[in-house]
Length: 89
Image (cartoon, rainbow, N blue to C red):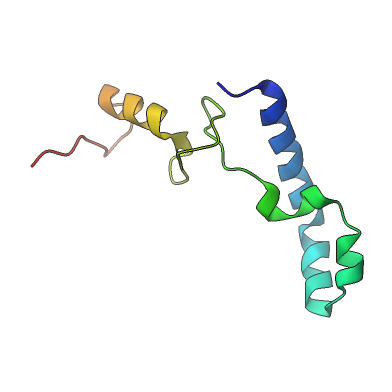
């Protein structure tokens, strides 16, 4: 489980990205990089980390499911993910 402060920081970044998205696009199209650099750093979409919705883990996350690999495996083996089954050949 990730620290609550790390998860909260990422949520704050998501909010900033959403808030400044239109303004950033407008400044990029205008080519005004001076004004773009004065916006908050965390308003850039590349600063947001994809995290597991259950544990907050930041690595090994399947974006399609929003789960880290450990939770994905656990839920898949329990049959809680519809359409997912263990491969065998």
